[in-house]
Image 1 (cartoon, rainbow over the protein chains, first blue to last red):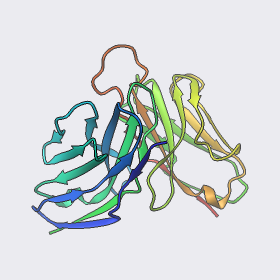
Image 2 (image 1 turned 90 degrees about the vertical axis):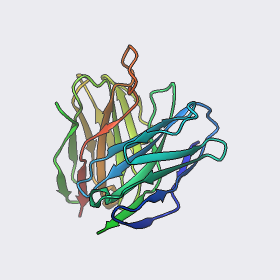
Image 3 (image 1 turned 180 degrees about the horizontal axis):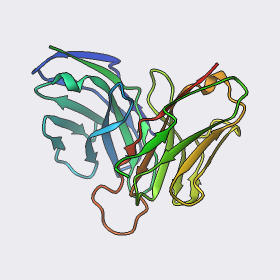
Length: 115
Length: 120
């Protein structure tokens, strides 16, 4: 079975600074996807970034980038130039590839961006 | 539609009542997922449909939980004889997974805003 662990329940960062959220996972699969989702108070899960395990290059989306370490089963999210609108819960999630499968989520990290 | 739509947004039920939660996925999305999110936790998988077929219901916590998607579009999650431990946010997601053809983003799940169920 797959598990996803987020060891930081809460993080805070000042506006315009950089913050890194940690995620580790456990799986015996070789092909899979990893995701970071953002959940603001409105409750709607919004995809931030996706990484395919077979790709060695780390994914980037504007101010968001990941550090994917497959051997260490680590998948951290770096947010650069933090903005007040980044304040939200952030969830790391795992999905098997080549299978229409469910997302397995971590417990989340609450990020507060201060002005 | 433009996004995944869920209704109602909030539902308060007395213990023992039956409730029905609705999910309207993105038009053309073959796959539909239900998740349960307890307070302070990450979402947990309940069940999965591909078109009208329920292919995985391994996450349903008890036989009081029932989901259907009779025409392969709108889905309803029904909880019978609600208990206090059923209080949670119920999230629905849809994706193109299971669609023929090459789509780069086929496995991305798009979520609705959820239904917050409170059982008193």
